[in-house]
Amino acid sequence: MPNLSENVTRLSPSATFEMAARSAALSASGIDVVNLSVGEPDFNTPDHIKEAARKAIEENYSKYSPVVGYASLREAVCAKLLRENGLVYEPSEILISGGAKQSVCNAVMSLAGPGDEVIIPAPYWVSYPQMVNLAGGTPVFIPTSIAGGFRITPESLEAAITPKTKLLILCSPCNPTGAVYSKQELEALAQVVLRHEGLYVLSDEIYEHICYVDGPFSIAACPGMRERTIVVNGVSKAYAMTGWRIGFMAAPRWIVSACGLLQGQYTSGPCSVSQKAAEAAWNGPQECVESMRESFRRRRNLMVRLLRGIPGLVVNEPEGAFYIFPDCSSYSAKVPDLAMYLLEQAHVATVNGRAFGAPGHLRLSYATSEDRIEEAAGRIKSALKLL
Image 1 (cartoon, rainbow, N blue to C red):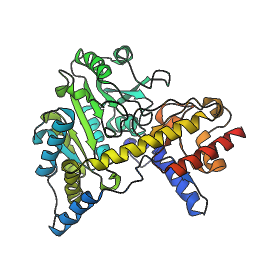
Image 2 (cartoon, one colour):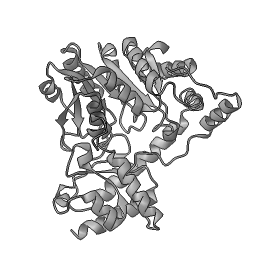
Image 3 (cartoon, rainbow, N blue to C red):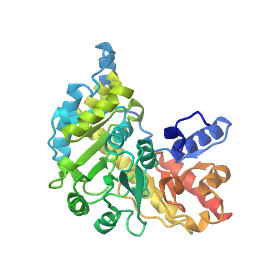
């Protein structure tokens, strides 16, 4: 395609959405597919949030919103950060965007450019390196292992830093592994970051409330790190609001201003009605969050137990998010693409770990009912027996 820009031609499609499309096509042909590929809660948005959206429509919130988001929503984010994270921000240090994904991209595009390096622990969310590529930067990966809990160490971080390093991207709880960094682990990483002037951390905390251990703890709360951290979060996962497309960043004012300038030129402010719904999510009752988290915990326990009953799989117990990332190398060595084999043979949609920087693994989402999890595990076990 000679007429496309280099920015586009160096990007790869999202493996998660690609697998979701393939499974949807099979389902449309009448095949019963258990879809464990997409990271989307299967719950409905809570009623009090939907009611806030209806009210916003009635009150004619149908005009352009400010590029940075409504003041009332930015105030709600500040209140949330203080209440839940012990972090003090002013509304001018908050930028509302069209989902946490846009918030991450805003930060990468504003801080990294040609010649800059961005450290990304692997396994990683599929879009992180693509965003760095789009910015013209260079992704630098720190491999982790299932034996090490899929977490980087201060030593591995220090070894990856060069004079060109501009940004470290951390995701805790992590997509795709479910790993959660403890307060002590983040404090140790923060000490490394603080030794390097001009190095910043993008802390992706979108799975914050889907956590089964104490915490999670934001690295921005570590001494000296507030001015070095871009906190990214949103309503998609915790409140089952993926389609509402509201995320935010909390960061030093100069970073927020730069990201607002960027956002103002390619999307402007996010959906007005969605912003009022998000305001109700953060300001309203939180029992819905606790209820969904407990459902995910039960599903996590079920899937871990079932997958550990399949010979040849190495399965750890994730501490957060709604993914399991087993080592399937004993099987993937036998077929070119294990995820495609399971889709075609077992009619179970997963995602090849190669997309996350970890060949030999699969990502399975347990954001579905316990009945479907049991069905999927049974199909996978039967299909793997044939290899």
